[in-house]
Length: 275
Image (cartoon, rainbow, N blue to C red):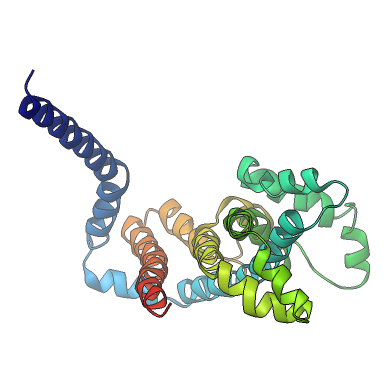
């Protein structure tokens, strides 16, 4: 077989693999999104506007953004601290902590919601104490935040840990040798080195928080206009046979996630050019 024949055969295989990958992407991801966007306007743009300007829908988006605004910073700080502890420190049960970080990825969100019931419900480990002090956890914002924090916990940590291992600690040791404090070393050496791992972890965490359904559905009580998030609002419209309304809210949620990804993509080349 000639060299040209081998090259043509190799090129054909590459094109076939690319075609399969593109078809899979179209069928699994792009296709359903296009269908949802198209079905959104089944009842006209006026119905879409009415759905999105409804007071309960607006409140649902406000709740989603509020829960996300609390959960993302908490998990960002947690992820950085845990990453530094696992990579830079030696302590008992380090392996257990490393394994625990992945627990939300293996555990069903519904199980997380039920676990919060056992902890904070009536007769639970902490439920009676909170009830005696007039603090409502379940069917209120605190339980929704706790559930969202738990399901989105691993993403920042799992981006930071391999990056810290890759960069090593030589520069940090040099900074300490020159008299830098722990905070100065972190701010000037460690954080700039892991900033893109942190940003990517924040993007994944934000997307997970915006789309969380299972755990929040269990602990929120789904009270319309009170503890309903955007994902719960989608289900509410769907079960009430308002498919166009459900699609409208779903499209907005998808658009929010896409905007977060686009923002990261636009910022990254700018940051790299400044190096």
